[in-house]
Structures are given as structure tokens and as C-alpha cells.
Amino acid sequence: MNIILVPIDGSEDSLEALRLFLKFNDPDKNKIVLLNVQKVKIPHEEYFTLGDRRGLIKYHKEKAKEVLDKGVALLDAINYETAIRMGDPVTEILDFSDEIGADLIIMGSHGRTGLTAVLMGSVSTKVLTYSERPVMISRPMQKEKEDFKKKYVNIKTD
Image 1 (tube, one colour):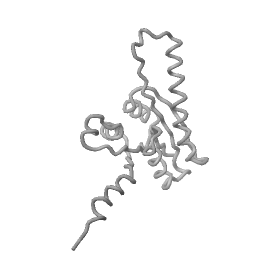
Image 2 (cartoon, rainbow, N blue to C red):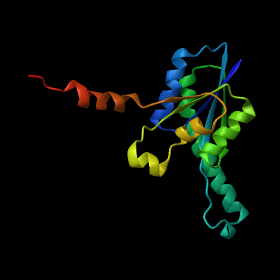
Image 3 (tube, one colour):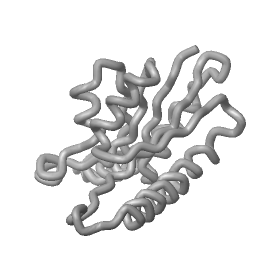
Image 4 (cartoon, one colour):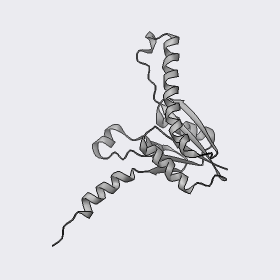
């Protein structure tokens, strides 16, 4: 059985990547693992008590469950598991994919370009760059369609 890792962050782009895969999925051959990584940074950690840290972790686990529930709603009784990690999304996705022996990582891309992409970076691009496993990235189709229409469809000819 193939293990397909699908990191989702709650964005429509990550859910669209899952929808795209489900169109081609063979439930008898694939097990889907949905992963949400919560980027948790405790400011001035030395000033927090143990109880405060536990509350913060509990909060992030609840947020992760909300995100994962959106993905689970799309699966409709398919063989799946969910997982929550805390930390840097790129590192956690790569480490988790190794732990579970993922055969494929499927991710959505927010479609950032230009200076925004350079300054903010892209989790999907970094996973693609550093992963030793196959990675499929789904780009946001609606934005591409609108850009294409603006550029090519409304061209007036004489």
C-alpha cells in the first residue's frame, strides 16, 4: 500500500491539492495521511510557567484539529490517518515523511511570485527542493485562469 502524505494548512490551495489527488486516488492502493504543522513560538519562553506553555500547546492542537477536519470532510470513508506536528513546517513535513515512509507528498501552493516569493519563501518549494521523496505541487488554478484570460483572451485584433 502506498502512503500519501498531504500536508494541509487550512488554505483553499492545500484543500484543492487534496481534491485533485482524490480524483485519481485508488483507495485500495493508497493510504492518505493528512498532516497539519502548527508553527509555535513562545515569546520570552523563560517567563512562561509550565501551565502557560500547556495552554498554548492545547490551543495549537485545537487549531490543527479544525484544519484537519476540513481535509477529513473530503475523504468520505477513505483509508486515512491524521497527524499534528509543532514547529517549522518545512522541517516537520520532511521529518514526518521520513518517519512514515511516505511514497509521495502532495501539497498545494499559494502561488506567490516575484518579491513576495523571495522574501517569504515557500513551504512547498522548500519541501520540493529538500525532500528525498517525490513531491507533487498543485498550483492555484483559479488565479492562473484569471491571469490567462487577462493576458490572452481579451486581445483585440483588427
